[in-house]
Length: 154
Image (cartoon, rainbow, N blue to C red):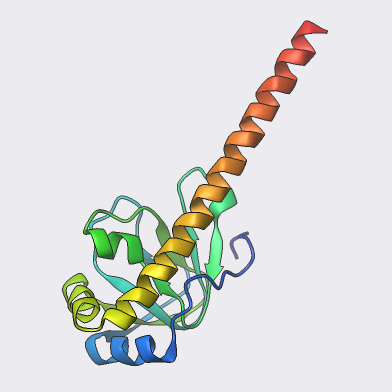
């Protein structure tokens, strides 16, 4: 089993959003170690985890690895923008998901502004987490660099 950080709850959907996604999505099953989507891969929509655990990771940044479980909505940034995914999602256990294509998701967001607000709030939490983790990484790198110089001077 992969070594990842604590399970994250920042992408949990409300019951209302879950119900609407169920109307437009397709239920799919994945075995452990399957890739839902890959960093820099073309957008295929969002994935609502119904059962199981998924690790979201960024290449060469293991401090950003997080586990997501039931009711987590994965793939939001890419699906909203249409750009490639910025993370990789790999199943840690067997997983059942609702897969909603980008077109169906964006249409739902247009039709239901209150659900769009929920999704953008989740997106904001995700971006805040990533920015905080990257800032911490920069601080650690600067600290290590500073310590390295002091060791050379002494």
